Length: 164
Image (cartoon, rainbow, N blue to C red; front, side):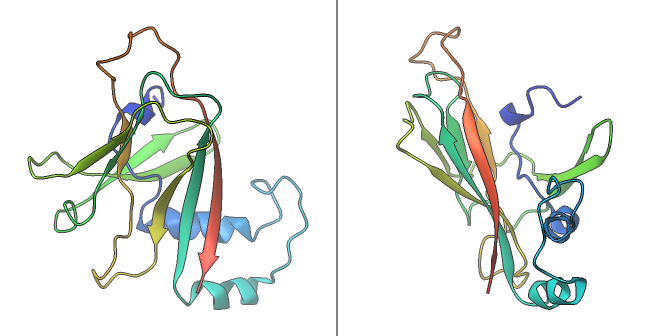
């Protein structure tokens, strides 16, 4: 069910999962692999009562030849409805965000991205007043200038939370 998800336009989180994943970062198990946590539940509640974001940093392990990273620019998707998407795993159900195609979406792609070029994606922003993008809709695409059997993109991804 989750195969080839990177080739669909999506954002990694939605309104619910952005908060759930942040809360999970304060829990000792299982997502944190037993690392000691430094926040009490009350401290985590206080942090999440202010603005916070989830940001992914993606670094290619080698120069990307096929299926480069593609990003939709905000505000070209700002005024349209979003679709909650459920990803079913053996041990949980994940929630992401999708949207439908419009001809006026602005797209940017990073062909031949090297390991020295890191992508930064805002996957969740708690601000809901429309003043900033809350998401980074992204996908991968076929690069028509490269052989279809060329090596695909392989990234190391780090998710972080930023509190204001």
